[in-house]
Image (tube, rainbow, N blue to C red):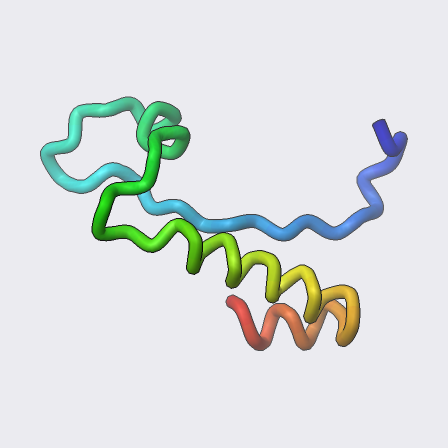
Length: 66
């Protein structure tokens, strides 16, 4: 839609299924969070990363969130 690849992306990491979990990786990644996982905290951290990226730049965001 933008017509270019010249833009920054913020990716939220999701691990692979655990040992013994027979789900396909795509099904695992697209599934709901488990009760013990804190999805809201993950989303809040991603939003914080976007704010730092916009305010302080790529290097600062990478140092803080990678």
